[in-house]
Image (cartoon, rainbow, N blue to C red; front, side):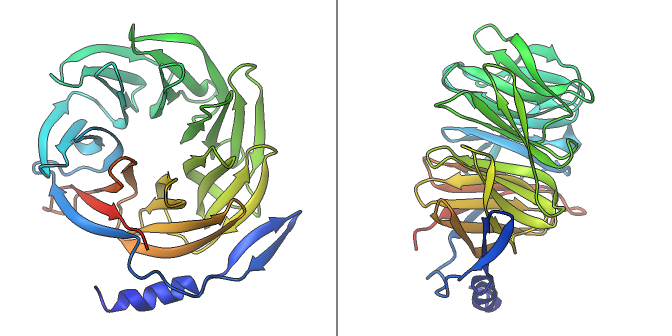
Length: 347
């Protein structure tokens, strides 16, 4: 282990935890016992030869990872078991979000040019292209209704649209919020969706899919730039991460109240993931770290480590079944892009 890491961890563990009580922010004593080892352990680096662009969002299925390679205008396919790039799908200008539709063997690639490209996930052949009102970005799989949900559009038509993978066609009316949502999460046992919308007055939007009603939850204290998001539906806790200043904000989705703030996390975060088995949040940030936050109770949280990655690496994918976090690293000079694989550790 790097000799500086124990000192870094000790400094991190000394940081205070914060909770919200009404309008006041009160410090909560920090845990003073650092973890026995880093909560994420690097086990592989997979270079992406011939590709020098930024890696955007991921998805995965079985042994396969799918990720957008922005500079190459296409989708990388990695076999994490072999630790190698097995295919590159060209022809997706400005790729952003990737989603594998379980049961349909299709890959949905969202483009900043306002399109979603649908590929056969075995042959990688293009099956269909769907047009949207503007920038298509984040995608979420709805396993209850078996729909691909897509963040799409520019002002004033931004919102979330639905695709039926059985017919590869748009269904229903899009849920309009005006601006383009950056990340969003859905309830599996209720009608709600939650969207990060930095251009909506720096707020989280709670969207009722049944009625279309939109409720705005403002960010506190001038915080802004909420891009990354993840969700603990069982405890009704929504986690949104701001860039200015870097902060994890925890909302109670039953009433929209903020129950906790966690400072000291990595900046420029674009992706975050909730590890329910360990009750941890992994925040992937462009300053070269993954911040790991421990959930001690639904209202009490603390930063336990900042695990080194590479500067500029701010997107990833957490494989729940394999307990692995993958992080996309952009190219530097003549060094191609790569994917870093981490094992989640029990402490």
